[in-house]
Image (tube, rainbow, N blue to C red; front, side):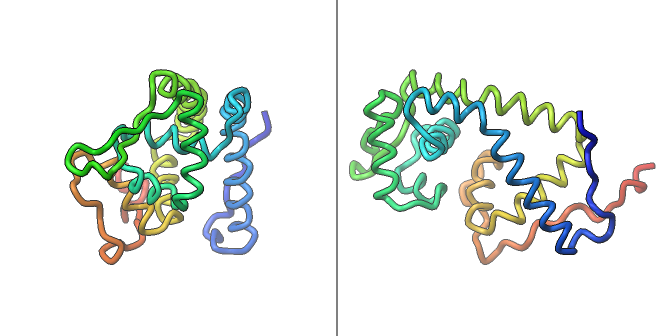
Length: 188
């Protein structure tokens, strides 16, 4: 195994360190999704389909509008992907109970099984990386990613990760997410 390369200490805002971070994101992203891409290809699907499967599995019964907002895509783009998933028996829609004009999304049994298969390898990969890096590094990773995603995506993330939260923080109320001010030596 190739040795891990730490970031330059205290020089993390230099161009080479920022490019190094981008390199890490791009290499990790493509390798992390490799097996999922292979399974999706067997179904004649791609990453756009995967994102729909993933988020509908996370929040069954979400409206089409909510999913469009989460994915930050146009209705026309979604319609193509949704039609392909429905034609393959992976995605179902039903009218809303209070507002019949709403379309609520859910995975079929086959769609849920495919999503579990796709997620299984990613879960193993993330768990292995989390275990190797340790809790402090995982917390740092979460902070960096939340600061990269922007206000609207952070609000969606909050709705997924703050059970019972009716309203996620509004864009105007959000500030960059900061790590704890305590240093590693504070606990010694």
